[in-house]
Length: 85
Image 1 (cartoon, rainbow, N blue to C red):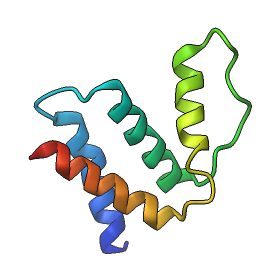
Image 2: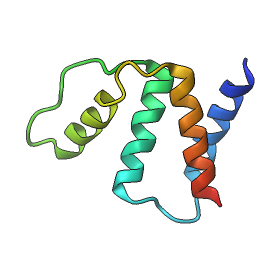
Image 3: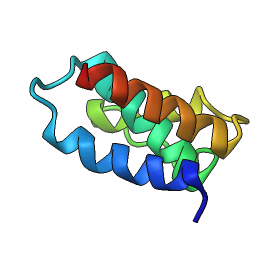
């Protein structure tokens, strides 16, 4: 396992124990970066119109299409570290 992969997994654990809950925009960034880093480009059908949260998550992830997994992992780690300080 690479050093980046270890830091990514640790950041995913750390985000669960933040002192304060991040705002919704930050939560969407965290979600999208995590999904891009762990699964790659967005897949599956876009949720229905009335699934507001699902649509927001899908669209946030979709914006990262084409980003390399390692870049997404590094940005995720950096964002979690900024939230911890």
